[in-house]
Amino acid sequence: MFTLNCNGKILDLNSPVVMGIINITPDSFFEGHLHKKDAEILMMAEKMVQNGASILDIGGQSTKPGSKRIDADEELNRVIPIIKSIRTSFPETIISIDTYYSKVAAQAVESGADIVNDISAGSLDDEMIPTVGKLHVPYVCMHMQGTPETMQLNPTYTNITLEVIQFFIKKIETCRNAGIKDIIIDPGFGFGKTLEHNFTLLREMLSLKMLDCPILVGVSRKGMIYKTLSTTPEHALNGTTVANTLALINGASILRVHDVKEAKEAITIFNALNKSS
Image 1 (cartoon, rainbow, N blue to C red):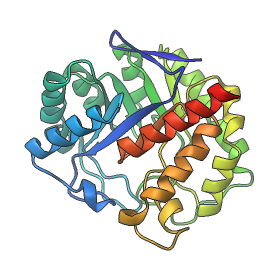
Image 2: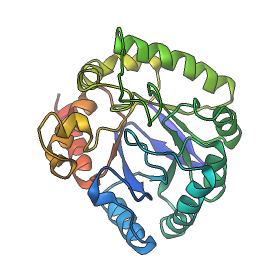
Image 3: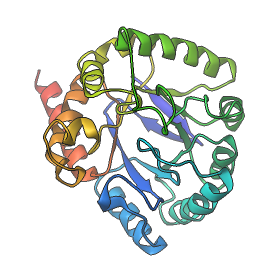
Image 4: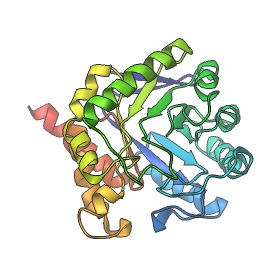
């Protein structure tokens, strides 16, 4: 089993944990998380902590398909005040910064963040992996084909699970050589993948255990859920809970979600099932 050293706070992944999503953006794909005032964001953070979130993931940049990129300075203006406020209000809660800019990662950790969550695995900023190595914090390394602007135009694989594993073998080596000790891998559901690719990855996710890293799964209210159910992100909670449960069965250590209470309940049922076997 895995433990993460998050700036001196030890996160035990013997039981899966929940990462709550807090987007500081005006264009979240999920209406319930559209840009809010600082006080509302703190209330959201408090509710997530009360409902059992071990990690709060703060993001200032939309990465939904076709989203437009903002620069590092604008992203910093969005996330740093919130990170400082959450750090003060919830000193024991682990904070993750969701960014692909090394500059944002460094200033976020200096302001109280404990984990760097990078959708690009260092491909959008060559300084990201060396910077995280110097910061001595855990790194979420995600697989993505293309960029947020282009990733859903025509994602193509010969064998997606094998290609994702090969990608991580190389990235893990790069991270280790940079001095990163705690590496979390994220298969990148919805990032440069068709619905079929997503479900193949979910079905075959146990294969990623060979990489000997904790697995983070982020399927919350995504297209693979609501498109399959012919609904909208706002009506995709039940489908998300089903997919999260399947992810737990297939080896997920961290569930990245909009809805903490329901994800925590899925983990409780999953743990009860394992104890009774």
